[in-house]
Length: 268
Image 1 (cartoon, rainbow, N blue to C red):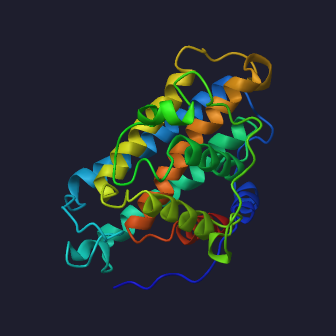
Image 2 (cartoon, rainbow, N blue to C red; image 1 turned 60 degrees about the horizontal axis):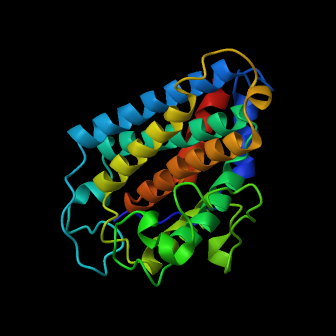
């Protein structure tokens, strides 16, 4: 079984290193560039879907107390292989691209994620949704959050860490935060790799939907309102949260994978 990484990679460090390795034009926040980033996001997600369709083992029923794929399910998840390495790199590439997509919209990826986790804690009260896979609207009567009310995160504080392990400045800390969020709601029984990959694919579609009729003219900060930018940030966060969760259940150290890719780019 592969060992867990003990290193901690800060979101800000990845962002800074990305800036030093990229040829992207800084400060370009045009609608056309944002749409290009989302096309690329869709392409990268499609490659991951191809991998999950062709080499990743099918999800199996697991015991209620199993939070991650077991070696008894399939050695693919816990033993080194070229296929697992390829899949891990794909997840790392997608993670790095989410930094690009957020920056193009003048958004901070980590802040977006933490704000959305805070909102999700209100949308999905742990005491009401243990073991359930329903939508947040199933709990609207109790939370007051509906499809049109209570969704804005403009004034939402970012989720703070409750312990040292949930360090909200690092990829590993946020991963643990998301894992604990799922475990508190007994969602781990639903969080099999292919399940999560499909959920992530759905969130990429919701992000694309925001831009599908905007055309390719103008600047984001001029044409889009604060509420629209908040919605974009939430959808980027949804993709990122599922990606972090997917990497976790697949035994992939997402921060490490991102840094490997950036180190290789800086050498070229």
